[in-house]
Image (cartoon, rainbow over all chains, first blue to last red):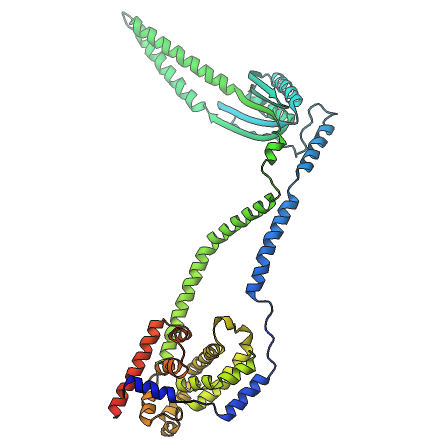
Length: 317
Length: 158
């Protein structure tokens, strides 16, 4: 008998369930059929994902200040500032950062402070106040540069204030406007000064020996003297620089509102929401990726084991 | 299609598949009833877009049968039945020659299963492979091997 005959004989077989079994299954089927689930996971996701995106866009759009609101805020600041010549902006005032320096060591202190003021007049007044503050604290200005135009004004000042008064100076200068940027750089100059001191002492000893020689080498003595003087001048300059802290102060008005809001169309909220969704998705991918991979491997291994067990079960007659 | 319709239409197929898989008509009856009980509970999960009701019912039947094979108690019963000579008087189905019947009994459950799916239920290779969780090629190879065994057994018997 060929394979074709075997298949033909097998196909001719008709297997029918016995009547008792049929009756039993009919009884089972007659039982109340559970209702089909109307809300499946897929359907829920189809609704939930756009809803979440729309909600996020709505929240962003509502919480974002509009152009009109910004204008009103400016107006409010202007009227409030009438009473005081240099009223700080409405934003919570914060003080400039002061980096503590070790006492008894020569340190070079450079501070950069950017302040925002409400208008050109305030900038002009701010320059005067800053110079007055520096002078009152035994300091001085090394450079002042101011410019204005189109309702905008900027002033750049470099102030030298004794390092002992720098805390007071920064505290008072930061009251002139709203701090928008600041940077403090502290460099220890003591080690360099100590090294210079040692060099000078060594050169002076050499000079003494040369002078004691008969005849004295005049040329060498002059060279050494010049070198010692140069080192002493350099040391004095460093000490002077360490005595005064340098404060680079920038006073400026707020940039035009048009520039800030340029390009914010009616769909800006949606774009922001989508950006955040993208960032969220990226984070989820970064965190969830390895976990998913691990779970996938576990699932794959479990499936392989299960399949093998099934094969073993079905390998018996 | 309601569950009652599906049950009425595909009862013979499920019963036939289980008879061949277990080679025990008594057990097949029990398992068929259990299959339809389970299928009723899971009927809300059946998606006609992903396959026919017959295939889905056979998948449920397969799970039930595998649980049956796994059960230690039932395994012992199977072993007792295997030792019982009267069991061989119980036929797979009407219309099979005694030699073919004996050859079928000599096959493993897995081999009988693939014959039941591909020949008895006339499922295409892709559907049968998906049901068995193997590749289409593997399914075809398994069927050819089973048929070859039957052919050889019938040659020996002749």
